[in-house]
Amino acid sequence: MDGEQLPEEDEEIPQTFEDEDTPPEDPLEVLARCREYTDVEQFEELKKAAELFLRGQASLDSVKEKWLSLDQELGARHHYFQEGLRFQEWSEQLLVTGRQVFEQFEWIQDQMGRLDLGLDNAEELEVAYSLEQIHGALAVLKSSYQTLRELQANLPVLSDNPLIAELIRVGQLAAEQKIPVESFLERLQVYADMQDRLQQALATAQPAPREREILNQEQANLDEAFAHQQRGLEELHQFALTLDREELERGIASLEQGSQMQLQLREKLLQTVGTEETRACPFCGSDNQSQSRFCASCQARLPENLAVQADEISLAGGGGGLPSHFQRLLTAVEARQQGQLADESWQSTLSWFRGLYTNVCRQRDRQKPPPADTPPEQLELLERAGQSLNQGLELIGEGLQQLESGEELQVGMEAILRGGERLQEMPAWLEEATNLTNALQESQA
Image 1 (cartoon, helix red, strand yellow):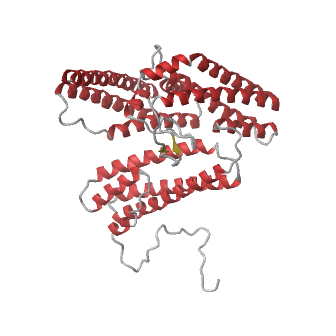
Image 2 (cartoon, helix red, strand yellow):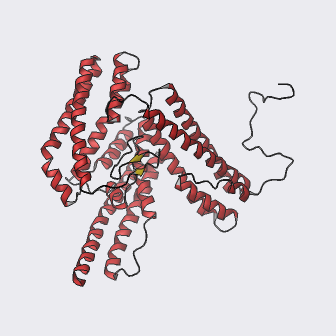
Image 3 (cartoon, helix red, strand yellow):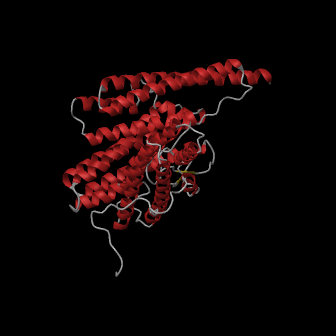
């Protein structure tokens, strides 16, 4: 150790290692070191915008817009990883890797702040260096996710359903009094919520004719499947009171039976659209069937097309009541106003709804304009649909900002409901445009 100097315990370690005596680097040369693709589209767009900005070919506002898009994406990924990590607590190695992921998220957040400050102060090198640091952290995240997938592949398979497998594992630990029973009840509530969302989705779905035929044929089996699920949930709640292993086994058996019946129905519905390629989860990279709504690995919500996403946050719930996502948000607002909802639960609900909203905005922004030869009548209908979408999203965005600020919760919720009503108008315009297309095709046949 002779000749070496160790930093003091409280000494600040610089974020970059350039020698003070050497001339500063060219920001564009720093940015050129970030050529490798990161698989995070929002970051790639930010890199392009930043490069144009550094060349004097783009405005600060355009970079800020991309910065905000990346910030929202990273927030969603962090949230979904937190949700998914509780299904990955099998070994110390898994937990260590999980902590490494959280550390990278925290480091990226620090660099996002550094980037924002560099933009505000016109410090081009700070902009370039922060982007370089984010680029490196995203590469580490990608590697960590791969490690998590490899570790998961070696875990004992307690159930084909990852949520049921988690209930088995945590239930066994609770029975041995190694963890508090509240941890088991928390997982049980996650499972119950997913069943509620599935029931609501089926109740409000607008299936294709062949899908509707299958649902009608399988209605009795579907009802039986949900009955098994409900029985299992009741039995597992009883287990939480007694910690009797037999109650745990009975409850799990009921959930497994209901889950298998639901899986069989899902496979029949998938057959109606034929065999399609898998798609990678944008949050953890795992392959999923193209029709999956949630990632089988990390439970993150998978992106869908604009029509599905917009319908999901519209008020077209059917049955005369609010759809489950709006009802969940409204219930949270009412509980928050009455002081009955903790900060963590409130922020989790806001983050969940913000994720829905952000996905729709992202899909809208990627929509291509209609072809140049689109008939004027149809073009007008498509423009009206676009107006309903834009106005609805604007209202929902304004309402979300008010909810997130913690002020005027009632006013914010009312704006979100009005936005949902505007979104509800969009499918009607799209359907009319489709009918017009069909009529034009028939007239030309």
